[in-house]
Image 1: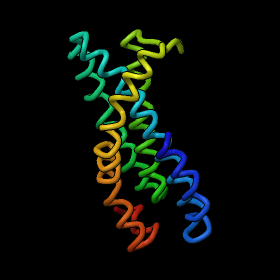
Image 2 (image 1 turned 90 degrees about the vertical axis):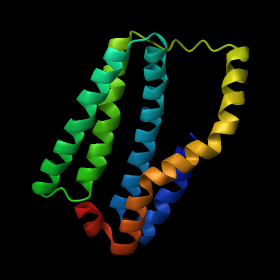
Image 3 (image 1 turned 120 degrees about the vertical axis):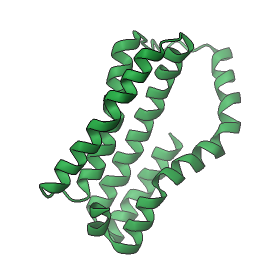
Length: 155
């Protein structure tokens, strides 16, 4: 959520100094990150119940298709949007498959004890996960900032 809040703060600046597309890019990427984290919960639950076949199938089915889609969209002229759509599809497919195959449904009942355990775990994980996200996106940030949106789309 903090990443989404930061993206909401940065998006208007990108819109003012770069382009409205850049604003949308950062917002969509922030939302895909949340979807990825929600998917990780379900995948972890599946792994915990030793459903490795389903997990492997989800990863296999959802890793290649977005890349082919990205290449096709870039070839027909979508430019940088092809990368954003790729990331969005890369977040939506595993989310949909993992929720469909796991049978897991969040019902909103989190006890105080569970919430405390989550917060105790999230504190030490905040910095490594933040660095992980930055490193995953660093190449795009550098290419976009240094060479511009068109080159980033080709990248």
